Amino acid sequence: MTLSIETILQGTGLGPTQSVGLMQVIPLLADDDGVALAPPSLEVGTQGYGTLLLRADADTLVPTGAGWIVRQRAQDHALASATFVKKGEQKVVPTAMCIQQTQGGTITQGTHPLTILPAMLRKAALAVRHVVDFRKLWESIGALNAAHGVGGVGGNLVAFLQKFEQELDAFVAELEIVDRQVGAIVLVAGEVVGIERTPSAAYFRAVFGPLVRVCYGSLAVAVAKENREGPSTRVPLVLAEQTLAGLRAALAVAREREEAIANLVTARLRSEPLVPAETPDEVLGDAEIRTVAGPRFAGQVVTVRGRVAYASLCT
Image (tube, rainbow, N blue to C red; front, side, top):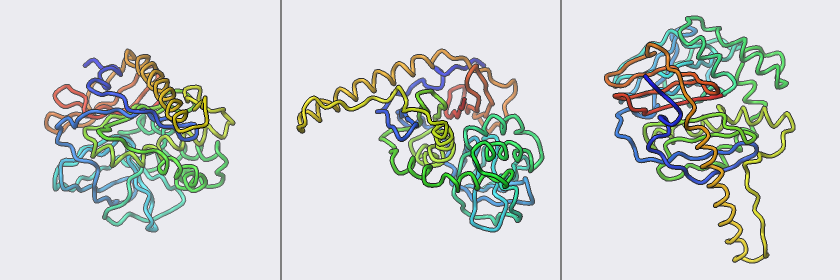
């Protein structure tokens, strides 16, 4: 099986770049690809620590790094790998991981808000995706917390999210989904840090918030703490005259420059190779999940009859 970023982007166009803080999002636009994999609307619970119970009303793809942070007095959980859930199936996943070391208790099955693991944890999680040990991500979460001034909580991801809650909320409040958006190229401080593609606009709407708030928002917040300047890929608005006509002209110039930068960024990515694992992580009919890695990116890809329907790659 041969893969590249070009394979993942095939059939998509680019939407207008959006910027918040150090994060920029270049939308990927396409018509729904007809793949019958529903967005992750699930009933979720735990059967002891490290074992998730998942149920869906349609054949569903649970995204890579999916997690559930609940209001119950229960241990939050996440999955390292994407997974399929068949319609009506009560799926048992024994390779889940606790992401709240200091809280006990199991999750009562029901509908709980989806999150997606921070980009900074994704490679570590994928490396242990087949390991059966509910504690397997605690060390990595603890290191993330310690590096960003969240002390004394160990492998407790919610402590990080609570510390930076306002900054993370801003990404969801200020970034918008556009028509026909099925994915995004994500930049932080002018560097591409993630590529996301989903089977449909409905699927992308379901994962957009968790992606921009937690997965990539956490990275943007962490980079901002290093006192980075604004990204060089952001285009300033330069007014030649203080009138409505002048504003329209300045916006037109800025959008043209943004489009040129987005095309350049994408062109540089397309040839990057990805090496898929020899065997799929999971198969459902004609669809299969494979873990992939390349010079800069690692993540997972879902193909249906050899065609990419989903991809989630982080640096």
